[in-house]
Length: 243
Image 1 (cartoon, helix red, strand yellow):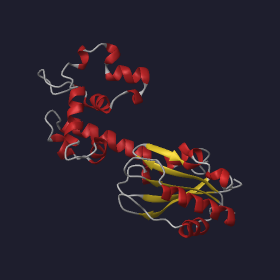
Image 2 (spheres, rainbow, N blue to C red):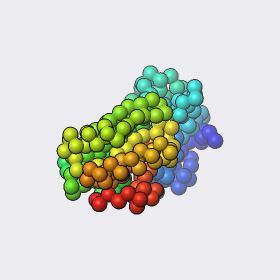
Image 3 (cartoon, rainbow, N blue to C red):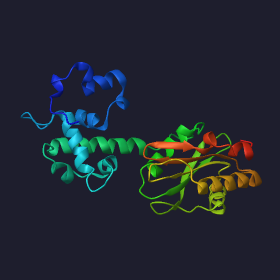
């Protein structure tokens, strides 16, 4: 569906700004979020702001690229090549994208307590969530589950990364961690664990028992989502960590 009707001509309940105010930003499609940034469409009876937002995503999605991935990496030059997108609209979009990146990359406050998978995922989002290659990371924690720091252990290809339990526990011990959360990303966006992910988690849980360094969780991140293996498997019942 392509919007040519002006947003001002839509019923108030269907306008992006009003819907965002009533139901929150998550209720809007990506094109509608872009429309709020654009403010206006192409004018002269052509595409509305929402239609222009759809057109931008369509153009960015050419060459078999995911539109959101392309949007994260887009340049002013690319945007201004799209009819109806001038420097003002292009810079507004880029400013919004950069602001979002900085929010995700904001350093956690000192002694952040990692007491929920969502907190751990938020801390790791900048390093793992949108990467084109698989990365394996550790959250280093003290005895009260307070964050001491994060470490990237390995960087792999677009489909796999390698992390050996020996390297993981060596880094935890070297950095003075006494609890840990491990995580890696799936660039495909599918955050279901693979058999290899399950096998590695089992090894780490066994290592945690032997070394007295509890593993609190193993997260898989990708494309704005995450999975907690502690919440979705029985491994922690099979290998209790005493955390």
